[in-house]
Image (cartoon, rainbow over the protein chains, first blue to last red):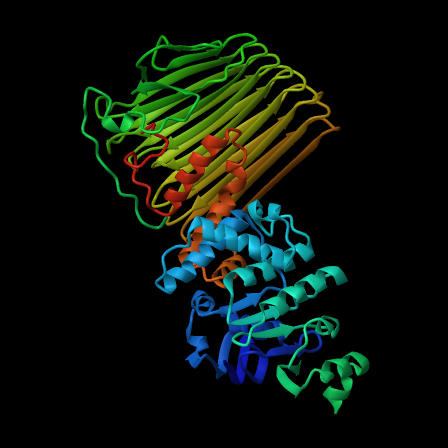
Amino acid sequence: MLKIKGLHASIDGKEILKGVDISVNAGEIHAIMGPNGSGKSTLSSVLAGKETFEVTSGEVLYKGVDLLELAPEERARQGLFLGFQYPVEIPGVSNVNFMKTAINEQRKYKNLPPISAAEFLKMMREKMAVVEMDNSFSGRGVNVGFSGGEKKRNEIFQMAMLNPTLAILDETDSGLDIDAMKIVAAGVNKLKTPDNAFIVITHYQRLLDYIIPDVVHVLFNGKIIKSAGKELALEVEERGYDWLING
Amino acid sequence: MANIMKEKDYKYTPELPEEFKCKVPLPGTVQAFVTNGILREEITIDGGVSLKTHSGNGFIYEAKEGSCCKESLQVISFRNSQNTNDISIENELYFRKGSDSSLLLCTHTLSMDKFITQEVVNIEVEEGAKANIVVMQNEHNASTHKVDFRLSVAAKACIKINVITLHGALLENDFNVKLRGEEAVCDLNGLYLVDGKQRVVTDISMNHLVPNCLSSQLFKGILDNSSVAEFTGRIVVAPHAQKTEAFQANHNLLISSNAKAYARPQLEIYADDVKCSHGATSDVMDQEGLFYMRSRGIGESEAKLLQQLAFAYDVLEKIDSERLRKRLYDLVESRLRGEFNHCENCSMNCC
């Protein structure tokens, strides 16, 4: 589904990604771990199409298409989702209207008519239940006045609404207490199918107790220095990164 | 908003043009029309509100002592090619003791003539009165309109003015507010949307003459193309006006690198036990916010529009009437979409 080959990216002339290679198949969950400043968030931003980063070389194929050629909205419409580490507040735009706009823009792209009000409401209710979100959130401005945990839950809710093929979750667990993390993880597990895939970026192994990855990658200094099964996460938790960096 | 507005030139008709007839009047609203400064019909509303002709051009509005008017008055003032001379209008608004009323003032032009309109609005808010005024300005690109609001606010009186400036060549709103009695409150807010070569000027002089008064100003603008917005906000706290609370904010969103926003906050505080603040910003679009929306599949132009609406939101939220707020929100949205076809599609039904 996703093939990243020799990806180099920089910001303001400073190289952050120095040749990343990752291959993700449908039905898989990949975890990307790594110390601060290793390039984890840059990787997710580059995949989602953030224009402040410049891709200097390498390629990314998503469902056989050159992902780097697409605008962020086109990537989203083709089923890519990025769960933000720091979700943005949009005052005055309610969650309902935001999601309706997003869904209808995706439907327009697929030559489908706008979603009916009844269908949309039913979907809202179902997906809010996935992340145990209170109905009162729907009328509030997107992320406005939400706590850190609520914002992250809202990311998972949006993911559920948009039903992506490939979801990248950028440190969705940061700032979450254990209960909120369980809810987020349960949301991901409910949405997982043999046809979609997840890339979970995290600092800690903790989240991976609840979302079991098929592959764990360690990113350091802009490169994947180790890829292995889920046991790698446990080893990192126990031994830190030094043995990998120096080894 | 980058599209230059399509202007429509209305021909003079002795009767009100079709567009003026109520399409969907706001429930609970009584409408009055002022053509080139002349009030067409005097009005009295049950509940103690009247609108009468001023001796010169303009009108006199009065909410009687102790009255509480459930119906809101909408005064639709427009210029048309019947009189293209420069005109001066003087309006007087009296909110008598203990009264409680709402007023919507809309100004328009119906032709592309180079109108120059000078308007004075004297506002007297007597003791304990509550006055709620919304001003909506929507004029052609050849119109210059200067409005001089002069407010006198007595003890325990409360006035709220929200000015929504949608369109016009040069629109200037000056406010001279005198808080004369203790515990007077003045809440002054504005939203201006400018593009092309439009210019909006706001000049406020907020005078706290006595102790224990509260004033609050929130003015925000969205500027595209080569438009200009100027904001001057002076707060003067007299030497004995202790326990004054005075706040001021002016925020501008610049869509184009050629647009210019000038903010001049001026505080003159002569008392020592006061709470005053001011803030002025000029900002460009938030790229992180746009990226967030685009990453959800929302196209770039729609994302920009949502961000502008979000920027305008907190000023519109100050409008108490939910129905009016919704309509103004829709007007602002269509204006920002560049779909705003003056008069023809106006959902305010006032033009």
